[in-house]
Length: 366
Ligand code: HEM
Image 1 (cartoon, rainbow, N blue to C red):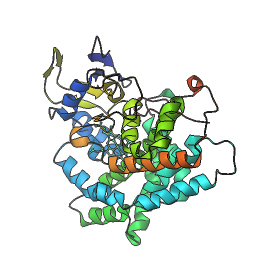
Image 2 (image 1 turned 60 degrees about the vertical axis):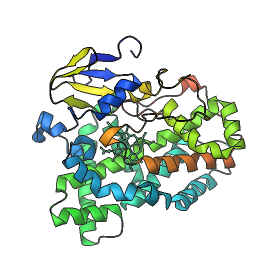
Image 3 (image 1 turned 90 degrees about the vertical axis):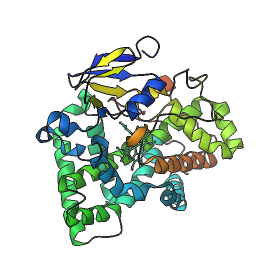
């Protein structure tokens, strides 16, 4: 597609027609184009919408700015940097439990629990419910695959009921966590509606569960497949920042952006996107575009200047990027320090990838 049909019209799983953008330069323009809306309530009618879209990811300015502004402070690089020692302790504690074993599943034993513990602590939700959160967010994020479509209604309802009960509890006894701050904002009545409270918290839980897991998983997998790169990183740990950017570029955890739709007819290069049509950006494809990244299919942790699109671009640029980068760095370096000889106990081509269009990651890494 990138070579011959870089702006390509297809039928989406929803049955609607839309465009897939695969080249880097086009992707950047599309992600920044304000003639493309993210507001799904405006497109389909608020009454037809799942409650999970009441957040910044599915809104346009000024609502987008208001909703993002409410949680932005908790995700600034400075605030996140203050969590370094704590995240390191969590990573070490998880690996302590594996020290005596001769085999682990990198996803279940390490890549999954680490970001979940961190986001649960930031939000103030009970860690003992993490298995439920994982099940609910898996179903919601992979809802486009037939494997999860039939569970969607039931799991979505359970998730909503759980969160509403939790908000009631927090309203009675607020703490210092992010949910308590959001509940206070909702009760003040001007900045956040009840539905938005649910939509924003659900988004943070889902984003915290589904993405960084695969930065760690896909990243370690790339190192295991490229032993010379792994040895280089062990010899020169100062390369870790570049290595994380390369992992995000080479096998990014979010394969496609969420969809946008045209507020008006848009001429884009030699194509006409009609008013109302959908557009999605193939982020992982753009990140392998040779026009932007020389030797794009080569995994090279010394690559300098890598303006990849793994976190998107424009006003919806990932809010959790500083947190994800820090978690990724700590996870990879701690694993390499403590298990420098780890080896993949499977044929890499036999590993099973997650279903669904958005998240790209393997189910298990033995
Ligand atoms: C948005 C990727 C981790 C919270 C996005 C977008 C991408 C992305 C591509 C934009 C989607 C679009 O424009 O359609 C990633 C990746 C991550 C990661 C690759 C890990 C490596 C996180 C974490 C959190 C988070 C840990 C929070 C706990 C969000 C939020 C948005 C977002 C709230 C919406 C921002 C807005 O609309 O203004 N992420 N994400 N992400 N991400 Fe992440």
